[in-house]
Amino acid sequence: MSLLGVTDLTLRYGKDIVLSGVSFPALHPGSMVGVLGPNGVGKSTLLRALAGMQSYGGEITLMNEPLSAVSHLRRTGLIGYLPQTPPQGTSLVAYEAVISACRAVRPDLSKRAVEAAAEETFERLGIAPLAFRALSKMSGGQRQMVGLAQILVRKPAVLLLDEPTSALDLRWQLAVFQIIRDTLAEQGGLCLMALHDINLALRHCDSIALLCDGGVLSYGPPKEAMTAENLRRAYRVEGRVETCSNGTPIVITDGVLAGGAGELR
Amino acid sequence: MTQAVENAPAGRPDCPDKPASLAIQYRRFVFWRLFWSFVLLAVLGLTVVVNITTGPAGVPLPDILIGLVRPDALSKATQVILWDVRLPYAAMAVCVGASLGLAGAEMQTVLNNPLASPYTLGVTFAATLGASLAIVFKIEIFGVSENYVVPACAFVTATMATLLIQFLARVFGATVNTVILFGIALVFALDALISLIQFVADSDALQQVVFWTMGSLARATWEKVAIVSAVFALCLPLSIRHMWKMTALRGGEEYAESFGVSVQRLRLMVLLRVSLLAAVATAFTGVIGFIGLVGPHIARLAFGEDHRFYLPGSALAGALILSGASIASKSIVPGILVPDGIVTALVGIPLFLGLLIGQRGRAR
Image 1 (tube, each protein chain N blue to C red):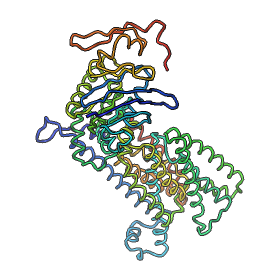
Image 2 (cartoon, each protein chain N blue to C red):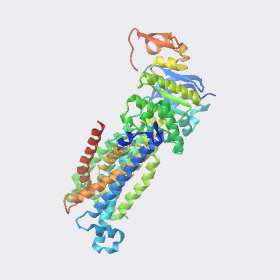
Image 3 (tube, chains in turn red, yellow):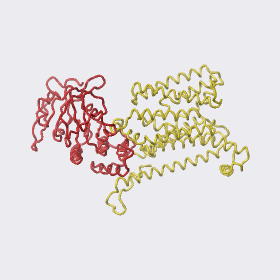
């Protein structure tokens, strides 16, 4: 069964069209898709639209139903969207932040069920020692892990993660990818994540969606979607795509294309 | 206060090496919050008793305690002092303080701004404008007793200001910045109108307006206490109904939205509630601005920002500050009732700064 479908999607930011004609093949349980592209191309806007938090043209389907027809409560139960920035530093402790994520729209959930889910999530993410520390006393990376816990605790079928490892060190970047992979295997969900670290995406994702110039430049397995030509077109960067000894592709950059990086739009 | 709990050992007595489950640790955490809530409640009760026993008439404490149980045992004059002056005064301090504390806490959460208070959106200024109009132009309202004309006008203008902000926010999008900007613009406009009214007022009216803006509980009656407490009793359950949503909102607007919270709708509902609380409280007492800002800060220091504790904690802290200030207002100059708005600022601000400095010192 297709969990998520995207057909001929058009997204606007204010009056400007950010993306148009975006279509993905049906996304099935277990898929991990990396959404790549230069700054401002619309990665975050795409994830927000898929989460139902942004208006769109075209069609998005969730479990073969149009997203707009899925009730608010069911949609927020099925989709977990992690924003790009970590949760803000407040005097809320991590455990309360995670529990409130469950209870915000489902105060009817049993106390025991929420506590058990929170316990499992803290253990899974390895952040139990942070449970009773205020968010204001945490680093950006620690808060990012708490943000991820807020999403995972609700056990959504579709994970939409916007730069989930941007504030994390190397060890925790790898750990997070492994945790997400394990979660998908256990729960039968899928994950789309916007990333800037191309090599991390090539190593961990099953498919890559490379966005460029208001559309999808390439979509497919990492080796096919990320080529030297696509790297030049999307990022204006000269580079090579090599293969590691373990078989995963890796991008080695040589520099910005002649003529400079261009202008940031 | 929560620091001690954070540092508490997590091991189970029967199995010292294995940490207790997070749920068990959290119950200990909650226990201390409840403990401090009861301490605050007990201190509030104490201030109420002291408030009742304080006053120029010098009624002995045993007489007051007897009079609370058997009013007939007191002389007629003492009965009036106790039941018509001191008790409504003490009760009004608790009700108004709790209303302003709760209003400030909710305002700070939905506007994501620790400096927000009922002042921020101009509610207090609007109430002052209404009161000034009633005093200076000697407004009469058919069917409303003379004693209630000033509060009625203050309430009407405060509600109108609130509805105007809500209308503008709905038309232009109820983002935090939009709401705050409209609020600030309204504050300046109202301030100018108040100044204009004061400019044209005669000296007697001007004196009354100035006294009203200083904020005083001296006009308290049981009827007014009943109205303020009824509004508080109406708003508190609604606040509690939204407590998880507001707790989720503390992580950030986008996070709350991703959990399914309709943030714009929540903000509009909370602002309406806050405005009602602040408008009613201000209408009967005049401007007591400090409580809505500081009550939530004290609650945040004591209880964190889980709104199950933070909201009632802010109401308790607000009630405690105003109750304490009302005792001071009767005691600073014997025989004279210094306006409570002045005392809350003069006594409360050093206390608040002391708390903040103490907290920073502990954090180092």
